Image (cartoon, rainbow, N blue to C red; front, side, top):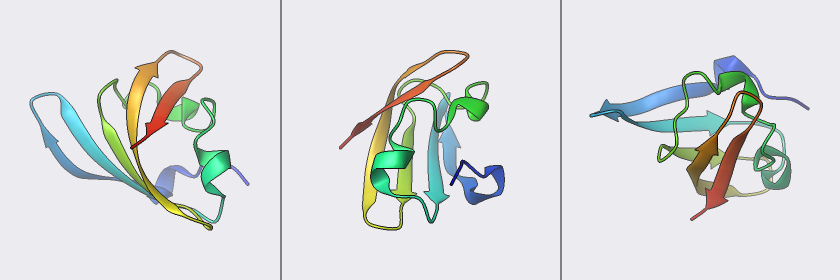
Length: 76
């Protein structure tokens, strides 16, 4: 599968920090790949958190780095 913009939503935003939620039929391993959220690299920032509800597991992920082509996540 692939990233779907409509499945990503903001739960909270304050002082430059965003808490995101993303639900998908993709697996946790697929969503944790650095290229998975790359299309959103202009709005997702380092130190944001994403609650990911994947098909096989839910995870809280911290955004450790963002470039034009990658959003690097660390499972918490």
